[in-house]
Image 1 (cartoon, rainbow, N blue to C red):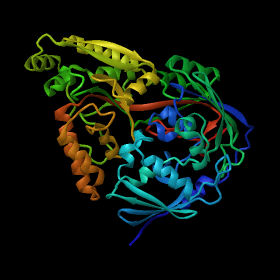
Image 2: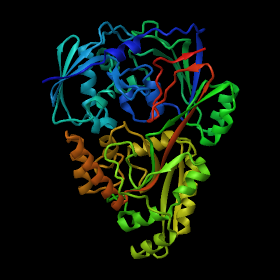
Image 3: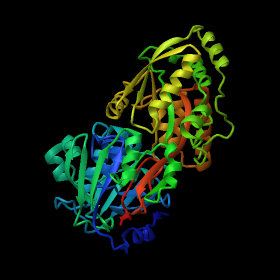
Image 4: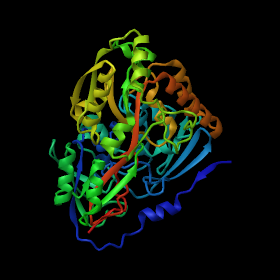
Length: 502
């Protein structure tokens, strides 16, 4: 029997008129860095995605308030078989240049999404998409190469672009001057200063009430974002330090929004053949895990508002979280013993790359880790990178052999695990046994069997120590008191559907 996924109630909620009688205003958002691209499928970094998705919309979205996949440009998904899907599109929607948002536009957009050369950041998400074809003006068929447990979530990541404009200007120009169907349109972009958008007067849905302009500002310093929120310079601030929570809780002019984060903070330990380093030895990687006092970092830098990873990269609510695993305890003596066993009784020297301003308190975390490693004889040459350069080196595998990163994929164990596949561009490790489990979990249709695959994978990762398992935590946002209904998601995504400003 065909499986139909109904979105009627969600559609009604999304399109219902807001009753707020607010005066139109400018809302200024402070993020860590200036976007590098406004094409959402050209990036996985949330600061890029937040700005780009205000202009270029996806087929579906995962509503942070409900956790459910809900319609945007697609209205309905029918699984005709485990490997064939029919999408019904929203009628009467146009791009802001007048092109119709129809089956031709969706086929074009899915084909670009499937092209690893054009959308390499989503190669693992699109890997099981085999073909896409137009059925009629408002109907599209997608064929899969295998069963795909995370297919609905994958569809929420496909951004829809106007084919004629895309062909005219090309990918690079589109990413800097996009045309979409979203609630906002690009006005101006002064690099490393401000990105300005105005409300789309022809938007198909309900515009955010009381907001006629968005201004995105790159503000890498935590203290500067906090100060700007308190003085009213910024109406929405992302990635505030948790140390600011007590102060903001008593400030009536602002609202505090805390969100359990999907982000897994870790130190990547490359075991790839190049560059050659001591980290290719599993005993060394295990030793470095024993060398780090995660709880001290959590208490001193995050005031206890974070949690150790239990030696795995899945979070406790996720299918496949392995309750049999425990975190590597802080044991510097054990770390020294393992280093000596691996042939490094006096330790070694290694490059350690860290972003400064990409994540809350990232520099402080890296300095703490470097100090703890020095205590067991591992001398790190700490290289601090501004966020844009850090992301460039992450994409091009230039951060190896050792680097600090926080990874926050969509909330499915398959997407989290895929970041450790040997062939993936972000992966710090090369391990054929891990690869086999990662590939198996991506297509396993039986929920219980899939859970066991990820439990086995987590146990193997714990043993192989491809990373130093650090912590997860909460994301802290601050808004002006007049901002209502802002519900950030655990992957750092901020949407303006249903948001209002008085």
